[in-house]
Length: 282
Image (cartoon, rainbow, N blue to C red):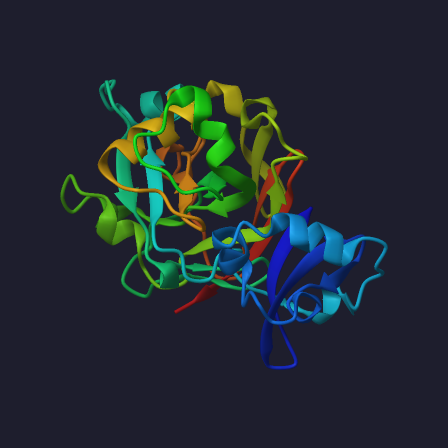
């Protein structure tokens, strides 16, 4: 299933993308679950599947405003330098453990919505990434059990304001400007993606391919990330783990290639879809 969060005629809703439309889910479940995060917390993906079985679309995808897949995640944990090509292009030393930072809920938008270049920087960069969305809570999760804690996967653009990212060795400022990232277009459940290491990620800026890598090139794979992160914090349904970007970022090109107003950035992951966002000024 492809679960999407959206706004239609001024009201927020969620549903399942089927062809070129959306089968509305919230009302079909009697209003018991208000959004995708609530569905995951209730372990109700099976209810969703039953509710949409045999149903045709209620709304066209072209009639809705896509929202971030998880609107108010408790945690958005991002992984830095998790592809060797990206680590090498940055000149950073190898790390024995994952490099982690966080993003805030207001730092990203949904598919099709403008990503905002801040007015106090000209170094606004793209980062195509795979996002894993937690479906089953856990702490001290074994690697062998980790994939069982994931509800599904999505595309993520970890839009990065490079000068602010490098004011100190902490990444947080450059990763959290409002509406600077993007998350979507939907969450594809794990029954359609049983192995996240078998995907291919691609980023395009104005139609030009700027990043491409198979996800098995991650330094720390998805099961290990789940295991490691769960050692220091409990993972709960709706938490998001953004797994890192491959080489090819604009900041490390000669000359640099930064996003500017009027650009269009696309993150495509085979088996998930395309997250497409225009870039606008603050």
